[in-house]
Image 1 (spheres, one colour):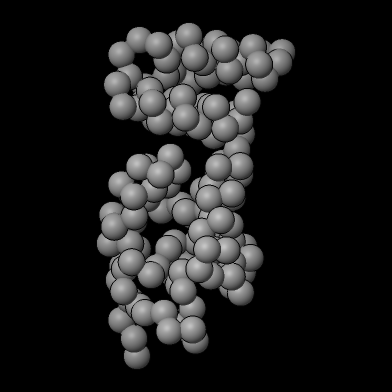
Image 2: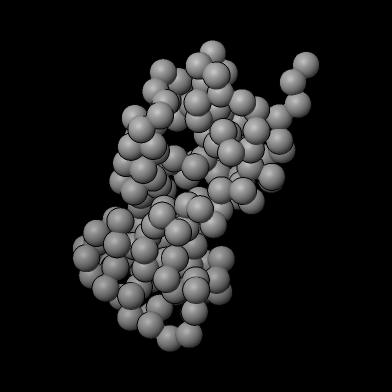
Length: 149
């Protein structure tokens, strides 16, 4: 029986690499779409094509993304994961609001935000609120808000 690295080891290996590439990942979430359900340790280069069980050949993917990526590898795989991550990674206002809650925005404020009439007004409001003192978290949220504009 093969012994694969744990999900935590895989996440830690890829976290900084994804951020440097302008992509977003979170612990316990699919590296492609950001959903956090029943993650698979998926091979980047399939075993059948000579891929290893080492951490640098494994990503954490939800079952849907794992299935979608099953027959692609090499440059095609990287183009696929970059596209999905940049265009579909928790691509919603609700995700942005959830991230804001994690860094200290109150439920009352988030409920008010959710009642804004247009997506553009809501995003503009979020940007204004984030302008003060969130350091590196501000960058991460701004990056993700740009993806949903």
